[in-house]
Image 1: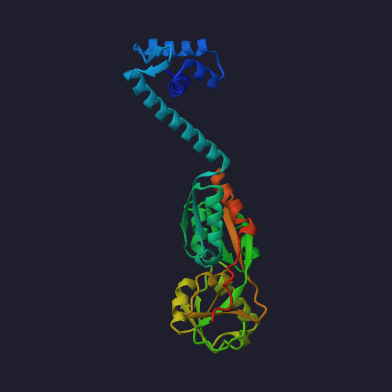
Image 2: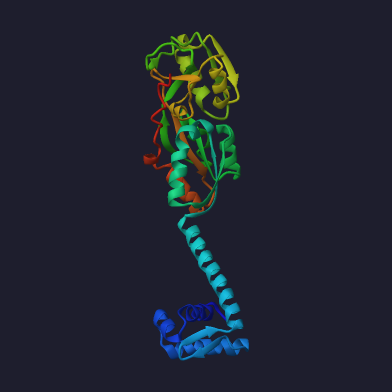
Amino acid sequence: MDSRQLAYFRVVIEQGSFTAAAAKLHMTQPSLSLVVQRLEKELGIRLLDRSRLGVRPTEAGSHLYATAANVLDQIDAATLHIRSLADGLAGRVILSSTPIFNWGHLPAILIALQKEAREIDLVLEDPPPDRTVRSVLDGTADIGVVTAWDLAQLKAMYGDRLEMRLAINLPLVAVLPASWAKSVDFVSLHEIREMRWIMPATSTTFPGLPELFEHLWNLRPELRPRSIQKTSGVQTALPLVAAGLGMTIVPEGVGAIADSSIAIRRIDDDVVPLQAVVIWRRSAAQTPAVATVIDLLLDRDRWKPSENAIHRQ
């Protein structure tokens, strides 16, 4: 008994006659009748009651029909899933992406993924960027998205082991306490240098946001803040700003999660943007699903900044 016999038998039962089943299967009635007769002989039991009005399944035939329908549906589902795997529309992908990128930009990618490849099982992780780099290098993550200020420096550090592509530039904004009274859209670094800056600690293994400002302050020491409070990450800084304890700098996409507890202003200085960079291992053989997610991440049409990103308050 094979899947072809089961498929033919299923059609005979569903059509109720050999004539109708043969027409549906585009084969002759005698050929179809012979297939069912051989199946009955192989199983050693009558499967159909035949009459001039058509055919009806016997008890054994009803059981075989239910089994055949289940088996054939599973074969169809398995075939579709395997084809989806080959086409990059299914599979498991681990994406490690920095929180300050996720806030404003990752939702658009997830929406596109649901529309185009909903069978992909995307596992999201959101560690700091230096840990994302390590996760991709050691293979615990398939893809990473990091926010660096100098792609050339990042390539000099890891380019021999990682592929890197720029996804989008992320302009920076100042996040201030809600008590910030000025109504202008811009602030200068000079006018906020007297405030306490709440910033992530610098890292020797990744050129990110704090390294960008250390570079800027080395070039223009007059802009260095009077007080800098170090935190584990930008996501830790935001509640402190909301409590009125200082200010911080983030990509403008933070507006996607901002509320009335903070004020967001553009920076009226020549500050280079952060760069959202997609990374993956050079030596790793990509699955089609991983390739699909990388393509989505690099499709800039899907990176739509929130309309509410700027000028809260």
